[in-house]
Structure formats: structure tokens, C-alpha cells
Amino acid sequence: MITKRIIPCLDVKDGRVVKGVNFEGLNDVSNPVDLAKYYSDHGADELVFYDITASAEGRALFTDILLKVASTIFIPLTVGGGINTVDDFDRVLKCGADKVSVNSGAIANPNLIADAAKIYGNQCVVISADVKRVKNEFRVFAKGGRVDTGMEAISWIKRCVDNGAGEVVLNSIDTDGVKGGFDLEMLDAVSRAVNVPVIASGGAGNIDHFIELFQKLPRVDAGLAASIFHFGEVKINDLKTQLRKNGINVRL
Image 1 (cartoon, rainbow, N blue to C red):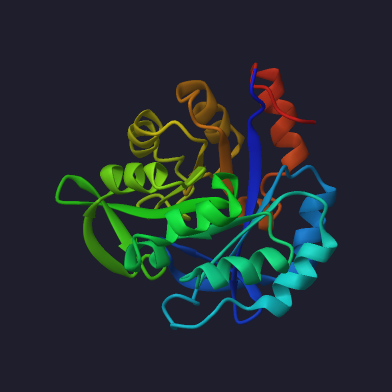
Image 2 (image 1 turned 180 degrees about the vertical axis):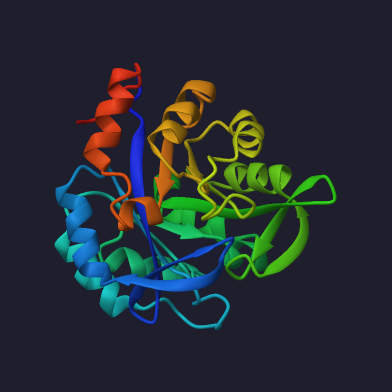
């Protein structure tokens, strides 16, 4: 049986970890290096690091903080934000990232995923899709959830996987930060459409939401969350113990 992964997410702005609701109203949380080390030492399976304003501000991702985070932790690290070229992949991987997450860069340059996958392998390329319901369809958003691309999300994600993305992080803008549970409808649609690991992001508010996610959608490989972990509302080791008690295979 495949082990389900629990992944904290560090949304970094101006060198600090922040967290908002529906991608807005960002609040300062912590130092990313300290928080990354805490998660590495306390049961996280992987870590995701997003420089959340790099794309919107049209600049490259901050590598100084990334270098410190990567040298501090001993779990796989996925990094995203401001990834627009193959050179950006190279820079981030050389800083210690294991996987590189693309969103706005892949929307602007449809060849980016294929080019990066050819050089670094599918396992290094993650498509991070920010998706929101618009007029009864799932729509892809760019620039950190600020810009509606007009593209239907399921076909877009499928195309990214066909081009070489080895993993999908599905960020539901509708449920992000609301803590009412993962977006099961959206996740079900995406996980049925692709044959690579899908990571659920947006909406986790308690342990039961993770149990519900993995029991109802066995195709989903991992659950990602931010504020409930950052503020100590859910401890990862407690979460994993409860998942195991409910018949869900996790690494303890």
C-alpha cells in the first residue's frame, strides 16, 4: 500500500512565512528557516516553499532564504514562485531543492514543463495549479491567484502532465485558508484525469479533514496545509497517529 504524505507549506513574502484566506489578507507567521527545521524534525514527509509574490512582482525567487532552508532540513523540498525559465529550475535545484513547482511560468511559456522535464526528469517538475470555480467550471488562475487565465483547469493540468510534469499540487482558491475541508469535488476531478501523484492543498482545518480526504479519495497521494500546522492547531505526529488508526498508511 502506498504511504500517504503530509506536507506543510511555507508561503514566503519579504523573507517571512505568511498565511491568508482565499489568497488575500496575508498575516506574518514566522521565520522560514526556523519553521522548516521544526517540520523536518517533527514528522513532515516533505516541505513546500513558495515565494508567493515573485510572479506577481515579476522577479526571480529569493535564493538566499532558500539556501538556508535547504541546508537545515532532511526531507524532500519542493520550491516554487517566479519560475519562468529552465535557468530558474537550474538555480533553484542548485540551491538544494529536490523538485521545482511551476504555475504562472508554465502558463506564459507552454514549453517550459517539457523543456525542464527533458533536462532534469519528470520527477523534478511539479505543476502547481491555482484553481477557482468561475461560471460552473474549474478555472486556472495565475500570478498567485490574482489573474483569471480563462483556461479550463482539468484539461490544462492534463496537458501539463502529458508534457512531463511528474506531480500535481492542486490549490483550491475556493477553500484556501477557510478551514472547512479540502475541495473534494475538484480533487476528484483532477485525480481521475491524471496518472501522476496529486497533492491536495487548500481547506484543511482539522485532523478529520485529512481522514476524509484519504478515505473518500484514495487516488490523492498527499495532503498539504499551512496555518493549522504553523499555529499548532494540528501537530503532524498526532495527525499521522489518527490517520494510521483509521487505516490510512503513513510514515510514523
